[in-house]
Length: 120
Image 1 (cartoon, rainbow, N blue to C red):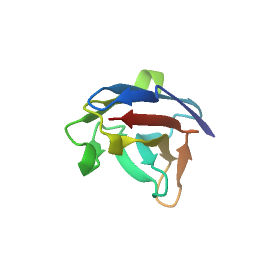
Image 2: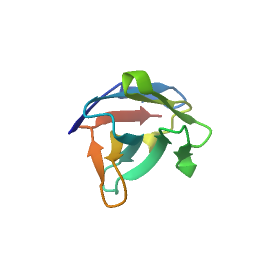
Image 3: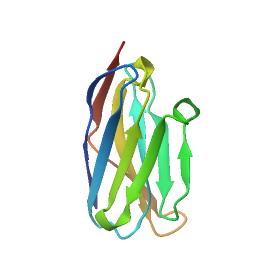
């Protein structure tokens, strides 16, 4: 089992910045990737950014150039630096960890979510 605890959400004016953090605990040795997803009211959960253990990153097109994902593997923590925030970034942001040991044995773990609200 892996537990994920997020922090750093809040209310910010458009153009501002926020930094989200997510700390993993429990059986973290088999975490292969961590990332962030978000879900706005009435919409499906969508990928924001991911980072693998090897250092590869991937971003949603809508956040490229504005958001940066980073990991501190020693602390089992993933961060999301969000700059130039827009009202359309308003959503609940969920931390995700991909855990497993091979094909057919990969599992997703989720944090409880943290609200980000951007006002104009």
